[in-house]
Length: 91
Image (tube, rainbow, N blue to C red):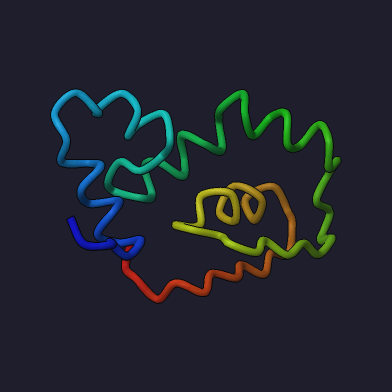
């Protein structure tokens, strides 16, 4: 098998039988907005907020933002987010 880029790897992972739960648990499910909303309401993000505190228009940089679910959740909570993702893929 030849090396895959990020987009190909995510699509391959989604297509593997039996990965449905892990695809969802890792927020690789579609549509991305639904995954982002689920993340924003979850325990994982609640812990992030516990560590960071309130947004209150504070600035934050998210390097390696991936599909943007954390950036979405932070922005919903009042953070001014700069999401940085060097991979140009649609995934």
